[in-house]
Amino acid sequence: MDSSRSPASPPAAASLKPADLWLSLLTPPLLVGIVGIRSLADALQQVGLASEELFRGDRLPSLTIPEPPFED
Image 1 (tube, rainbow, N blue to C red):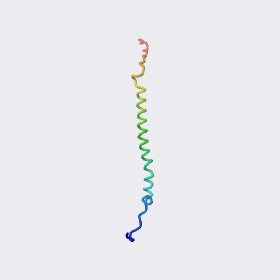
Image 2 (image 1 turned 135 degrees about the vertical axis):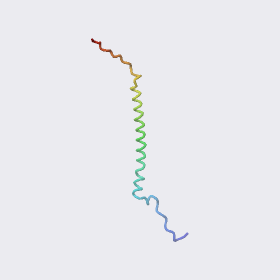
Image 3 (image 1 turned 45 degrees about the horizontal axis):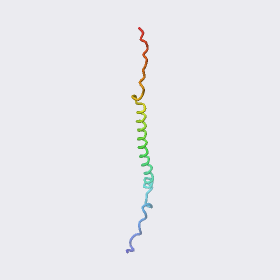
Image 4 (image 1 turned 180 degrees about the vertical axis):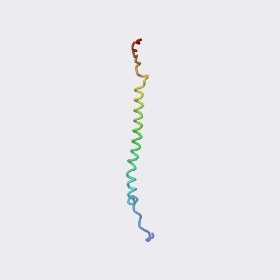
């Protein structure tokens, strides 16, 4: 072994800069938020389709509206 070698470098976690640390801490909540918003949008779209089916015209009874008498 060569005694002129420098000591081992510090672990990677110790060499993190503050910006790298913030980036690594904020990435998981951002990804969870994106997935959550996408699933919420899909759920709202499904609710909209279900309500559209509920109020579809061919499932409602046909109403007979009496016409008022015609006067001359």
